[in-house]
Amino acid sequence: MQRKRTLALLLVLCLSLLTVTACGSSSSPASSASPAPAASSSPSQAASSEAQPAPAAPAEKPKVTLWTTGSQNLSDLFTAAINEYNALPDAKCTMELQFLMSGTGDTLLYDRLAAAFKSNQKDAGFDIIAENSTALFNYEAVAGSTDLFLPVDFSKIPNYANVQVETAFHKEKSVPYRITTVVFAYDEERLPNPPKTWDELTQWIKDNPGRFAYNSPSTGGAGGGFVQTSVYRHIDKSAWTSSDPKWVEQWETGFNWLKEIHPYLYQSGGSVVYPNKNQGTLDLLINKEVDMIPAWADQVMSNMAAGTLPPTTKMYQLSDGALNGTDVVFTFPSVGSHQEEAYDFVNFMLSPRGQQLCLETIYAVPVIDISTIDSPAKAAVESLDISNMSVIALGELGAQLNDKWDAEIATLK
Image (cartoon, rainbow, N blue to C red; front, side, top):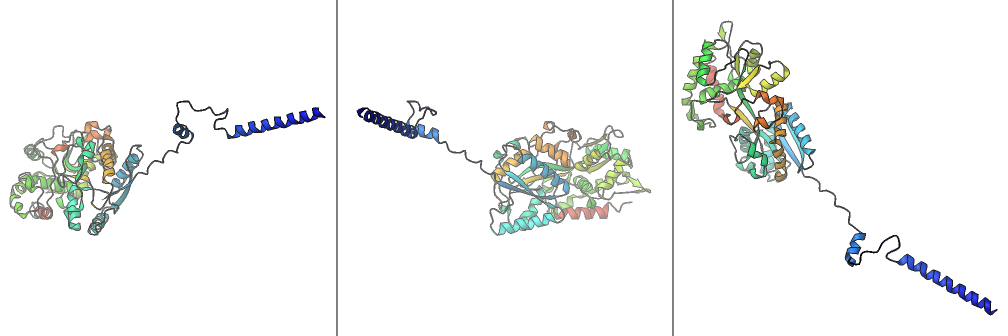
């Protein structure tokens, strides 16, 4: 009996020990599967090693809206450029395009910006505008203020250091990203040694009657650029961007020169003909009826790419005075936002890749050193000295100049 009690007591003690051991294992901070922290670790370090916070989600990039007007090829350019920029891992914003077709959209954009400005908006979605530098005056006129556009901090656009042209207007408020200019186009097979100066041009026209043409200035900018430069190259440069009527009295020297070359220009049916529109003059060069013409650089390159102009077509400027053109710029309305981030997109457009897109998509003349651009298309514009490009903006005097040409030149026999 005593032996049975002893065995029972031992069984109770064993069960108790098993229970204590099991409970201790479940409540221990370090089981055999989890090694204890090193002796040097502090309690706070041990706790932080057990529960690391989840990494923060990347901040969403601000959306920056670019507005512009023009023809379809300009929409194609910015669509391609924005897609490429947005794909860059280090892009500082997400660019979006608002495109308005020229003819109606430009006026609508003036009015929208003016309405936002007059109501003191600061985040109206007009973050950046692409426009001709001369057109910015129209925006300010509709808004009734020169405060419509913000000054540019050029130090935040590193690639601006490589830009080789200076804007004609709004120098502190705009960044040029491409050029459209009138050039002399010719076929080097028929004209291997083109005239290099205005005096040489005069003599060449007289020595080769019928081989030069320009379109009537009111029908196209190429002829208009030729006439304006012919007249204003004799006048002080301060007049080139002035609408002051006082300059009209100095037009006579240029008009006398236009009268001088008139008898030696392209003829049809025994009479001098001034083609209608830019394309009319280009058609004469395409059909080999003339050897040299003033033409828009982008139109020449477009026709070369299409094969309507031969690869022997060349473009150049006279050494003592280039034909005029237009610089196209980015500017930042005061009614927008995200100017800081938008600088990053502008910097991309001024890079060799951005300039290559301008050259290949819309045949724009680059604003940086052409040798830095990797494109076969640059061969057509390598000879152009973009630093010598001129801008003539006459305002209401432009129409008056065309009227004078119609009355005094077009009527010559």
